[in-house]
Length: 404
Ligand code: UDP
Image (cartoon, rainbow, N blue to C red; front, side, top):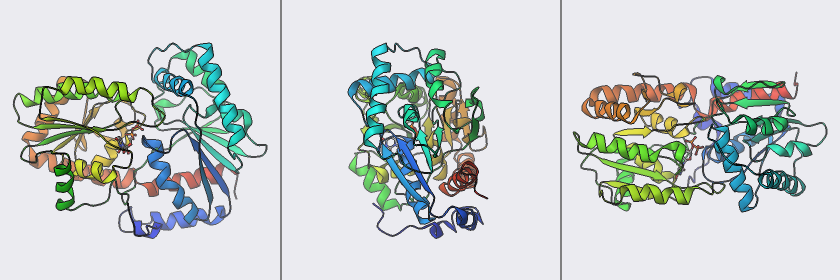
């Protein structure tokens, strides 16, 4: 845990010049305004990761910011995971009973939570139906963090009935925008360079983490950090590693955990473990939600970071690795395409063979790999840090609350 107090001024030497001053300027007219974020988990996954870091800074800027979590029954989580899968394009059987449970849990949560705020940002499909219970006179924005470019139509129609009642919607990529009668915004997610997940670590700290998990440092490490989820394609990563290993001796680390609102994670993790059981150079780490230093160290120790997703809203893990000067080889999907600039900050790939080819290329060309890593870090500094994200949010609040 960070013990020293991190304030916005701490970012002056890290973020692009002028951003911190711009933040203070933008916040001047927003002092005392109240905002509320609602999502469905406090730990696990990118949304929780970002809210945890963003909320204190809104408050430092004089905005009264709160964060509420909706929680439900196992059937509710099963339903919202199915909604999530269907919105990312996968056929799912969602029964009337499941839709009813979704509505009922949202209704119950609306009664339990304090939804009062001048502006509420409701994240992802799980709490979207709270809009039915929106207090009068407040503004509500729905923020979508998933790859919704090719959703199962019926499921999107169900959700769209709720979304179209919001005052606006935020997507992470232009291609995720939908036919909607409300204003749509584009906001890229962000990482916090001063969090335990991303702060500088020295080699002693990195080696301690490797030793803790018995990971050797005598050969190059390929790494993917992700929840154990089929859209992250860890099984594909194992295939990539096997191809690379034919020519380059290396080890593979798959580091992940599960999100509190993801009922499929544990089962999927077992199937990944089964694929790796015979190879002692594959390390599968099932990490607790607070393993931030551990993930940081692994990302810094890796020779090549892979993010072989087949669907990806944004992919914070990509920005995290890029910030650590690593070129990333990643599936050419969703938000990965705005982070990985082919041949500049890493490589986007479309197949196991293509991924293995580019991993080998980077392993065999360390000087090029290092140069790409430097560009990746600079690109992340300019585009994907928390300070830029806060600026975007302040502009959004100003516009939505019609502040003059
Ligand atoms: N993460 C973590 N522990 C894990 C797996 C992931 O802390 O075991 C973090 C990861 O470092 C990143 C976030 O969770 O900050 C995942 O965000 P991303 O956008 O990559 O994917 P999502 O899980 O939201 O689909």
